Amino acid sequence: MNKLEAIVSKVKSKDSLNLVSFSFKSLMLSMISLDLSEKIKEGTKVIVSVKPTNITIAKDFEGLLSSSNKLKGKIIFIEEGELLSSVTCDILGLSIQSMITTNSLKQMNLSLDEEITLLFKASDLSIREIVND
Image (cartoon, rainbow, N blue to C red; front, side):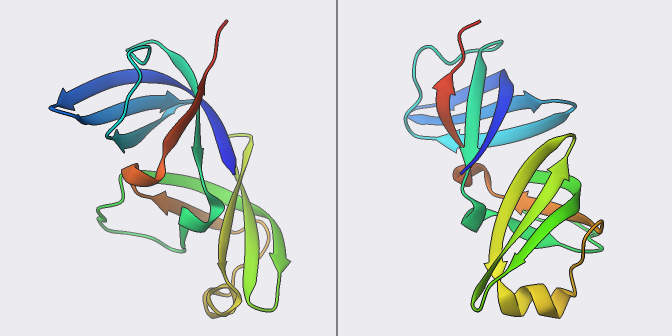
C-alpha cells in the first residue's frame, strides 16, 4: 500500500458524498468518499493511501483524463514477474509503487530513470489515519 502524508486543503460535501482535496508536497490530490470523519477538516494532517494495483502508468502522456490524480515522476525500480510487474517511481522524494501486467511493461518498454505519469481516480484514494502533531 502506498502511503502519503498530506494536509486537507478543502472539503466539499453534498448529502453523504464528500470531495476532499489534499496538499501533498507541492501537488494536489483529490478523494471522493461516502464516509468522512468529523475530524477531517481543512488543515488536518493525514496519511492517505492508494493501492499499487489502482495506479495506472502513462508514458509520454499529453491530454485530458477523468482521473483526478496525476503524479509525474521517474522510474527507480522495476521488478518483472511472469504475469505482473512492480514499477516503483520517485515522486518528489517519495517512492510510489504501481503494479501492472508484464505485457504492459514490455509493450510500453519501460526502463529505469524514465519519466512517467502515475494516474489514479479520486475513488481510489483513502484516508488511512489522522496524524497528530
